[in-house]
Length: 130
Image (cartoon, rainbow, N blue to C red; front, side, top):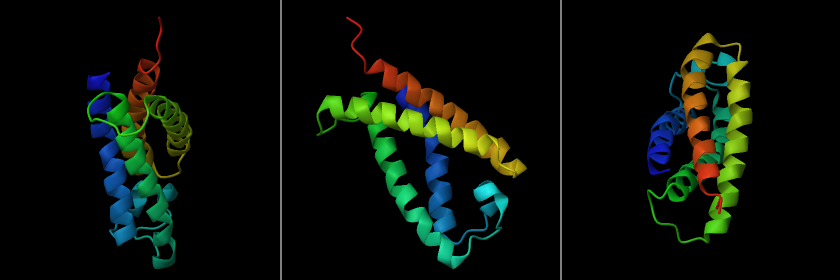
């Protein structure tokens, strides 16, 4: 599980970096939101704050459930969050793969598939099969 958590974190980090960059006004809009804007308009940038916070929680959950970092919260909550984020990323990956932007599909889609698989591996790894 540790290896899956680390690999998942590596594949998930570009998504966090992209959202922070888009919120800051970077011209990477072709990798998000169906490539509608080269630079995301100022009034839309605020919408990236909550997903970035949620992605940091997902990253922490992945690493703590995988045993890469210690967690101060009970393991049952970590387990529940692991499955929640695995499900969430599955739907996110589906939306990215059906994007009208070719760059979003190829780059972010590939990263999303790899991260989602790692999230599922770690989530199922938290189950006690005994």
